[in-house]
Structures are given as C-alpha cells and as structure tokens.
Image (cartoon, rainbow, N blue to C red; front, side, top):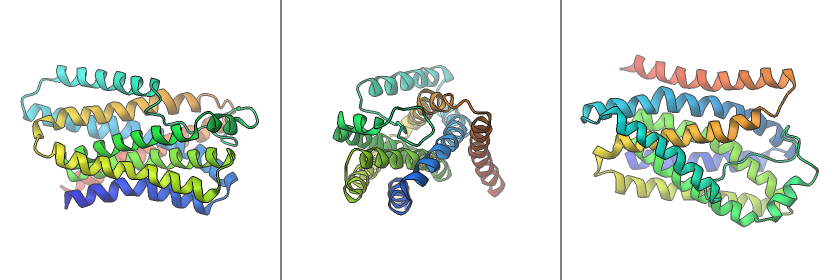
Length: 263
C-alpha cells in the first residue's frame, strides 16, 4: 500500500504539469506560473517548518537522537543542494518570457540554446531527489508523506510548465517538449521506488532523511523562489505575491489542523 502511495504521489506532479502545458495557451501558462511560484513559497516553507522538521525532531527524540546532529544535517543538506545547483545538477528555475521578470527578448531561446538537453538532465536528477524525499516521508508516516508530496507537486508544476515554455520558445515542437518533460518526470517515480526499497529497513535514519527533505524545501524557497519574487516592484504584484504565499501557508496549516482533528 505504501509503495502504491509513493508511485501515485511521484507521478502526480509530472502528470499535472504535462496536462496543464498541453491544454493551456502559452500566455495563460506564463500568468499561471507567476502565481504558482508565489504559492510554492508558502507551501514549501510551511511544509518544511510546520510539518517535516517537527516530525523529524519528534522521531529523533523517540530514537534518542540529540537535536545537534539533526541541525548539522540541516546545514549539510543546504550546502549539499547549493553544491548540486553549482554543478548544474539541481536546477529549479521558472524563468521565461511573459513571467513578469525583466528578461530581454528571446531570453528563452538563448537559455535553451545553451543546453536544452542539459536542462532536462538536471531536472531528471532533481525529480529523482524529489522521489527519494517522498519515499522517506511516506515510510515515516502516511499523512506526512501526503503533505510532503503536496509541497513537491506545488513546486513541480510551475517548474515543469516553465521548462515547457522555455523549450517551446527555443523551437521544440509542443509534442516533443511535452514528451521530454514527461520522461523527465518519471525520474521521480524511479527515485520513489528505489527509496522505498533502500530506506525501508533503516528506520533509524528517517529523522535524518526528513531533515534533508526539509533542507531541500527551504533551499528551493529561499535561494530560488523568493529572489524571483523580489524582482517585481509593482505594489499590486507585491500584494498578489503575499496573498499567494499566505494561501500556500494557509493550505499547509489547514491540512495540519485536519490531521490533528482526525486523531
């Protein structure tokens, strides 16, 4: 049953993003991504700080693990994802023409032209890591797994939709761009299944795995998404951004309240 949840959760983000990219026009996609990036900030930070980290420290306490090594793991995780991004193996950009950022014309053509396939390879590695994170969360607790999957899906949709727009602007056919993004999304399923079989027997490692998951969410939100939002200076854009961030946080808090109410 747990493995089934992991497979469904890892499939969901890729499927939803491909469906959105296939059914909406490019202009609508650009507007949608802009709002989803703001929503992702609230969802990722809320999940990391209100769900996953508290669960990690609670499980660590039950296993006799002191807080200090968990905080060291959090620090190490942040540095690890920073180094992965430096190596262009953990990209999660959402830049494209029409997204509200001040890029010059044909920005996407230049970006994709520099290595469209390397972008897909980086996304595949990113998705694989997401699959491992989802597996660890579900193995720790089913409800925690669902919240973690929600956070990843909320971030995955604007990422994959944004990548589709970049590939379209670079001259890829719509079918080819969607197919490549769908194949890249399957890396999350591979990571989830592998994580299930590898992490399953090692329950003592779950607090550390959950902290690493939190470090991933925090890094993406703080290092990538928030700097993007700071580039929009219009007061209306700022209000909209805060509203979408608050909506993401509220969604996570609502899920947490419903979970406690169900116990």
